[in-house]
Every structure is written in structure tokens, then in C-alpha cells.
Image (cartoon, rainbow, N blue to C red):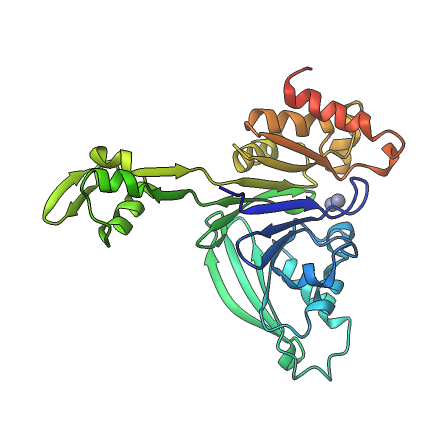
Length: 323
Ligand SMILES: [Zn+2]
Ligand SMILES: [Zn+2]
């Protein structure tokens, strides 16, 4: 089966951190951080439905204006997710311009502000000059977005200020093997959707009723083909505290790809703590402990511009367990 996610870094490892993720079966894309996005075409920006902002330091948020400008005439709302303060940051950006001639424009923004306890939602619509409307709060469960194809989760981390780490997970594919079904003399029918749901939820005690006969889950295993979904994670700008490291490992566990900051070399550990960033070695150790399959080191301090291989080498050695 073809992968559902296609993802890439928008800029080089020394430039603003941004990851663009396309959902190949839909004309949709997600954006992780909104630093400089001038390398994205208008067509690529139009596909973005959701922007996940780790925090609003300028290198992670300066691209917001370009996103908004390209999307001004679009019908589909843009959803923005970020840590404590994101609503004020979006509002501040919007207040920086005059909007008296855009009442006809359909665009709106829906901002989700995540704290340890709750998600507060606010919307801004071009129709009324982007006035803030509070849409209410819900309890924070760790899940930001639930789509039929995938879900996005976040962890609340710290970087002196609040920061979010993200992961996107494709739902597993459960397919019925039609030949095996026919071989068992079982009909295609509505019972299969209940059965697939039970497989998805791991309910081993499930009993399927087909044409008046009962079939326990164990007897039906050979008619399903399960394909594991992809998982991609994105973690930037994190204080290397034990609490943060544990939360990151839990969030990114089993990722196929982990995009993670490798800001300093480990010989600058002291400085990494002072500046609230990870070292390359720490990033590699996190990926190793979490059983990640591929590590993408990015967001490297410009001081290593002449020797990026020192950073990537250190991260990959720690990842592979070479010391
Ligand atoms: Zn930062
Ligand atoms: Zn940064």
C-alpha cells in the first residue's frame, strides 16, 4: 500500500524549522511550525488545512503572514493549534493590519490554545475584520485532531515558555480478504463494519452474528489483513529536563520518522540547558529510547554552519548506540 503521508523540511537545517506534510489521498496538507515559508508555492499553501505551532518565537511563526495572505480568498477555514498564548499571538498579528475592505472575503481562522488542562477555541473571520470570537473550552486529552484517516496528538513541554511537541498517526488499515471470506462461505454484508470496528478496538471477546450464527473473533482472524499506519513526529525547542525528555519519548514512541531539533553539540550541554535547547546527542538518545525508525536532525545553531556533519554525526551515533 502506498504511504498516506508525504513530508519534508521546507528549509535547510540552519534555516527556520518548518515541515510540510501532504495527505496523498486527499488534496490536503498540514504544516508543522510557521517559520519562513517563502519556499512553499501558493498552491502548496492552499492545501494546508491545519497549522501546528510549537511556540511563537519568531523563527517558528514569522511565516504566518504569508499563509494568511495567500489564503485570504479561500472558503475553507484554517485551523491553528499552539501552546498557551497562541490566541493572543494570532490576534496580535491580525491587529497589525487594516482590514476595512475584506468583508466579502470568506476566510476564517480557528485557533486552538492548548494548556495542561484545557483547549480554548477562538475564531477570527474576515467578514467582521477578524474580531476575536470565543468558542468555548474543552478538557485537554492529548488529542488535538481526530480525522477518519489519522489523528494528531501533542505533548505540553517547556522551553522556558510553553511549547508543544506533535505527532501524527495514520489509523491502521483493516481490509477484508474477499477470497478468504468466500472460502469460509461467509457473505459480504453490514456485519463486516461492526467486525472491523471490533478489530480496530482490539476486542478479542467480540462475537459476530452472521445469518443467525455466532462466530467468535478468534475464528475470523484469517479474513482480515491489517496494515500498520505511519507515524511522524515533530519536536523543536525543548529544555533538556528529565520531565520533558520523558514526555517526548512517550509522544514519539515507535515513530517512522522523527523531526527533532539538534541545536547544540553535546560539548555545549551547559549552554543547551541555559538556552533551553536539546543537543544532538540528546535528540539521538530520545529517538533510540523511543524506538524511532528514522531520525531527521534539524534546527541547528548557525554557529555550526561550517560543519553540519558534526551535529548530524553526533545525533546518529547516539541514535544507533555507537556512543
Ligand atoms: Zn524557541
Ligand atoms: Zn527555534
